[in-house]
Amino acid sequence: MLLNKGLLLAGVASLSLLASVASADVTGVWSTVEGKSHVKIEPCGDKFCGKIVWLKEPNNPEGKPKKDLNNTEKSLKTRPILGLELLSGFTPESKTEWEDGTIYNPEDGKTYSSTLTIAKSGVLEVEGCVLFLCKTQVWKKVE
Image (cartoon, one colour):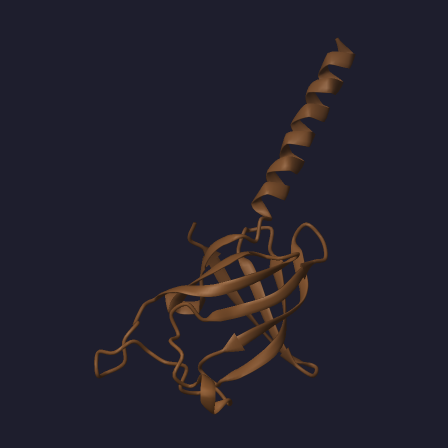
């Protein structure tokens, strides 16, 4: 009888562990801060990348699709924001962390070193850094 209870407890613990690993899946669609955009994160080769797949305000005041106007490279200023690769080069560090990636910020046209961490609550903490100055945003999973 004691053995059966031990097996049951071990089984429940294993299921809990599997559930936490499954919830740590970085792939899917995430809503950025204030719900301004949705980013789809998926494997790209042996790393993870993310593209903008939805914008709250997809058009400029003239009614045309928003472009990457703040990009520091003149040749990239005409590319659309929708479909833009925002995250690139992330490698898994643990079951809940991805490192060595970059995040592009279309609002200032700059690219920052970045890490992704899935918190225990299931939100994605997206950290962007310049030298030792870092800022973290919290994204919520849509899909």
